[in-house]
Image (cartoon, rainbow, N blue to C red; front, side):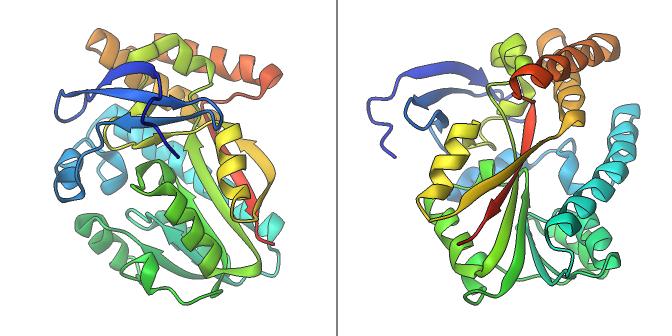
Length: 282
């Protein structure tokens, strides 16, 4: 991917940590956005240093966090059900970006043999206390060793997305699947909130995907998207945060209204706030 002469799609701000401004550059062929400038790897970690980075904590301090964790329990059940539908015989599962380990706990209870990868030491320690075992990095994984690899809102954080997809191909069994969940910048809520759209989440999100981008990037490695499923709760979660960024307060009514409107429009054009992609190896 060459973004040297790529046009600026939108200018956005880091509302949750640094207050810095970034550009999102557009690869028109892939329909992929790239955060620019991307922070050096040695300083990228500082942008995650926030008590409000909810995937790295089991905290339930506020009503928002309590709602998030309540919804998460249903989402976990739905994720495991989705996996079981494509791999009823189960097998070995690797969750990259495992966070505090709740998905792996649910998958393990359903009969999967589970391991995780998680760079955040605080989140990893919480997961270890739940009985989850970890691999240090994807480079340490043996070839063709997993039946399923999952990345729940993780691919957008990966510095070299093409190399990472090649690694997914390497570690996956020939009949394995990758499950990727990412925000969709083509959604109604993304268009409505513009530069305030919380799922841009710069610079932690280095890439911003469309359905076209996911299909084409994985096709390079001979992998095929066989199903796309909506993440309907994401429109509400993202809209609530976007309202906070736009107005300075958590407007539950307005956020819920925009989230509902986004889902209603997506029923016609299938451009939900976030999508789950089931991608088959071959």
